[in-house]
Length: 350
Image (cartoon, rainbow, N blue to C red; front, side):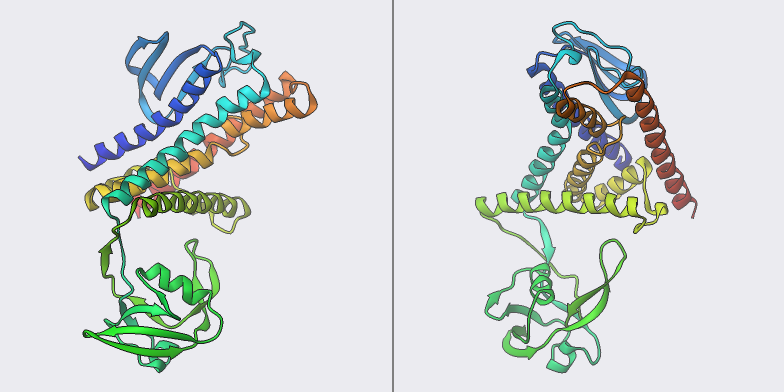
C-alpha cells in the first residue's frame, strides 16, 4: 500500500508540473496536442478540451506536447498561429517557467496544509550533556528545558540552536528543571560539526543534544503563512545548494539518488504518517522545480536558455546548434538518471 501511495504522490507532482505548462500554453494561445503522465506505452487515454490526456506505463516523468515543440525532434516545427514556434521569446519563457512555478506553488500549499494540521517539532529539552563542555560547566543537566536565552523566549530546539550559533559573548539562559526555574550563564565554544551535506564546519555550540521530545505547533493564520513561506524558501535553498555541491564535487556522485530512492523514502514517510508524506511531497515538488530549471537543453532550463539567447541577440540559435545541444542534453539527463538508478540498486543490495 505504501509503495502505491508513493507512486501516486510522484505522479501527482509530475501532473502539477505539466499542468503549469499546459495552462500557460493555453493562455498564450498555443495548441496542446498531448498531456501525458509517464512515458512509453499508453495505459489509458481520452480526449478533452481538444487535447489527448494519457497515462503511460513508465511513471518516470511526463510531458506536454505543444504544436511545433518536440524535444525528440527539434526540426519538427510549425508556424501556424496556434504554434509554440510563432510566440515571442518572453511568451515561450512564460510557458517554460510555468511548470517549475507550479511545483513551487504546490510546495507552498503543502507546507501550508502541514502548518494548519499542527506540525510536530523538537522541543528545547536537553538529552545529553557533553562532559567539560560549556553546558556541563554551567550545570545544565539531562531533561532540562531551555525557556529563554538573553530574554528571548524559546519554543523550539531550532530556535535555541540558531541563537547559540549566532551569539556573541556570554548567554543568560533560563532553565526549567523538575518544575522549578533556574538561571545559568555560559559562553558558547567554537567546535567542529557536520552540516546537512556531511561537510565539516566550525560552529558555536554549548555541548548538548536533543532529548527527542516533540510538541505540536499551534499557529495563527499569519504564522501559518510565514511557516509555509519559510519552509518553501528553505527547501529551495537546500536543493539549489545540493545541486551546486554535486556539480563542484563537494558531494560525491555516489550520493545521487534516483526514482527508486524517491519511491522508497516516500514509502517510509507513508509508514510514519500522512504529515510526513505531505512534508516529503513538498520537498520533492521543490526538487522537481529546481532540477527543471537547470540549463540542460532537454529540460525547461535549457529551452529558457535558447529563448534568452533569441531575446538578447534578436535571432534564433542555429538549428544545427540546437540539435547538437539537445542531443547532448538528453545524454547528460539519461546519464544522471542511470547514475541515480545505479546508486539506488547499489544501496538496496548493500
